[in-house]
Length: 196
Image 1 (cartoon, rainbow, N blue to C red):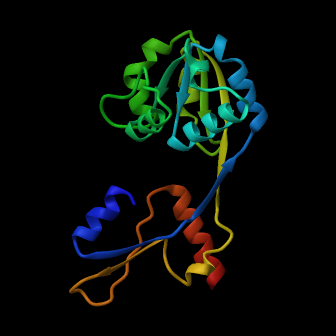
Image 2: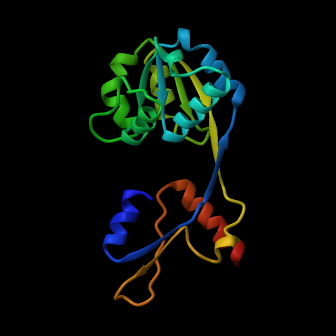
């Protein structure tokens, strides 16, 4: 359960979480190549906690562990990604002091990355700002499409419900839906259109 769900429950809401995306490893050969090239990578950049999980799952599958990153600096886009790194026993060398995302990372980190060899762990649908800015700063960038997110095939096992349905105490049987990413909005829209 995430903190927003807890806050809603403290306000009397009954929350029901529904998966809206299937997330799976995407380009394993790219991930393998990035792992093999760690010795010549100055910065390894994670754009999401899913990227962290996918990368380290593969690192372990190949018989290695986080010690393989001993000579590589790590950057991440925010607190959630930094926590995912800590779950693997690592602390990011750079994380935005304020905000999160590519913009926040680039504000303080770009001078450290300029003209360096950077491997970016991302998903293919992600924003291109980080990669383009690094290339313009003279970085040698290897972009690794480590995972994909696709709308779930069906929400039918859950009935015609939203990913997060709320029953607000004292306000009748009202329901609302909270979608916290563009991928979830697309998944929900596809589902609703199929129901028509």
